[in-house]
Length: 427
Image 1 (cartoon, rainbow, N blue to C red):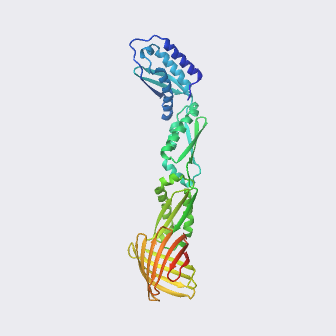
Image 2 (cartoon, rainbow, N blue to C red):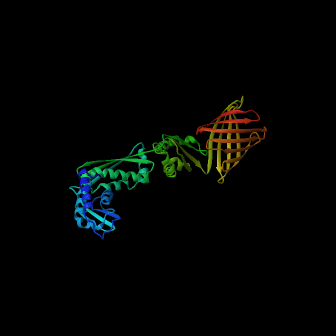
Image 3 (cartoon, rainbow, N blue to C red):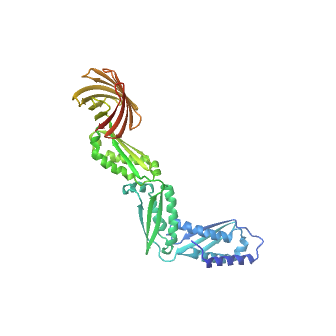
């Protein structure tokens, strides 16, 4: 809101006349001025009243600060009339019905206003999010539950002729709300007027780095991953809902977003069918990683096929593992192996103990009357080290395995027999 040129000229002329007026001896100097604006209809929103109060506070301070009360008292009505004229020019859409001046070291000035004609009776808020997956709208709206209501309270009841400058007040209020509730976002606000109805178009958009891509992985080490083919497609779509979100927002609300995705995972039939315990891990970045693990706590089943490069014999083989957990860390299992060159089968029962990332296993190869000792260490979800001793042939193997994806891994094996590279396909 601005004071017009004619209002400013009137104000300056009045101040000049006051300088020429005689001063009384028993005067008090005005050190503070407090302005209050009251809408006589009681319908104007508090935010607009505060803005009108701030505008008139500036005018009042220019008139009264450092002035003597005895000098002003004889012409107080003239002051009131001048303030009313300035107020009507500055506060577009409102008429100043009365101006009350209480003089003293702390002066008080009250403006009683009323709208010119009609007031805004209906406010429609159209809230949209730009660049965000529609399924994430409810998550973002939950962070600013009062935004729509605050917009309505700000605009409803205002004079229809004050909508233009009310839009500026509203933009400032929305910006402040966004900085508090969703600091990773900004909002643009436009008001359009249709008679007594106002439509507030609010578009919320992300700022800073956003999630451009989602690297998704769903796997299990206790059940065959082939069981999750259809499930993976559906959950990949859920993970892709993170696209467009600010990276800082994902970092800040990571636990909530993981729980949200975990709820979707738990609704999959495969989880209840095989009594699985899923976990979700989100690693926020411009290329965000989403990893879902589907593990069973009662059994362990896997199928692997091996193709070895660098060996002249037994370079194609396969193994099936069936295990039953007898405690949280101990597993009884049986493995069936086959070497495809000569179609030789091997049955091997065993016992494994897991301690954190380390697994120690004893395997008895029944056909060869051979003891097999195995040590495995998981460096990360993708890297695993293996050390294995075959007592019958006195062969030691050391392997470094890298998982390319849930169905394919590669392992470099160093052996005192012969080193080789192994390609592993796992179902």
